[in-house]
Length: 119
Image 1 (cartoon, rainbow, N blue to C red):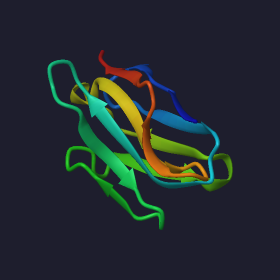
Image 2 (tube, helix red, strand yellow; image 1 turned 120 degrees about the vertical axis):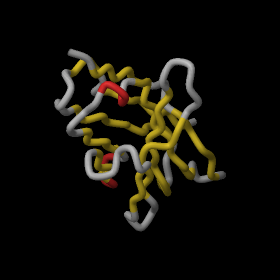
Image 3 (cartoon, rainbow, N blue to C red; image 1 turned 90 degrees about the horizontal axis):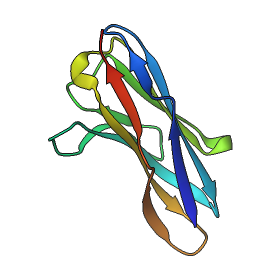
Image 4 (spheres, rainbow, N blue to C red; image 1 turned 90 degrees about the vertical axis):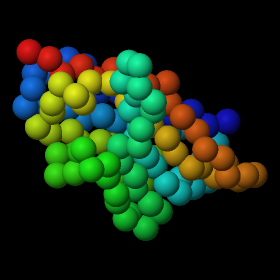
């Protein structure tokens, strides 16, 4: 069993920054890809950022130049650095990872962390 736990969310003023973390634990052989999604009230969940096994990244157009996804292989942790935050970035942010647990490869989700951008 694999668990993903997000942290780092909170309330921030427009123009501020937050750094989200996603810690994976359990029977992990390898983490292939990691992604961050977000879901605002009344809206569908959307992909924010993705990092591949090779480290290649891609971002939603709405966050390009402001958000940076990264991962630390040694401690099975992913990060989302969010700068120049806007009120429209307010949402619950979810970590998603494709993980091999010695038996099979599955996609796991974290429980989400709330990000609120407001003055």
